[in-house]
Figure 1 (tube, rainbow, N blue to C red):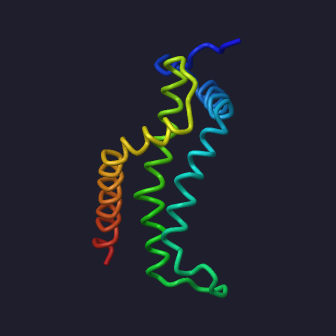
Figure 2: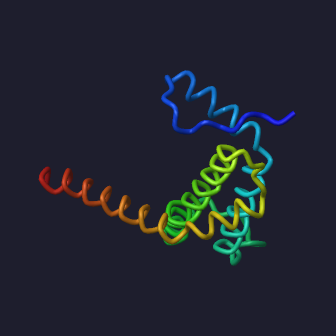
Length: 136
């Protein structure tokens, strides 16, 4: 039996939003987790490839920590968001979301999402500076 398409445009109360969200993500958990792993594992392995096989370091380099933060914020987060949006839109259209289609859609949307995240990050830095500089 096929489930009804996900209705994205109807108004909802908060409890219905949470319930519908958990139901939608639970229904496609395999696609979401698989696609997220396909993004996160290679990106993290590529950045940290030089440290494989080395002993544990209590303190990581400041540069490595910065690269990990930038990678997570500018690359991984937009791709994961695009994957989730693709899965929800596929359900809303009455289609079964697929792993490969979710990754393809995320990569197609990466450039505009990257710019949005970059502008948001710049706004946060400017806002932080606007709060700190007057206090100095």
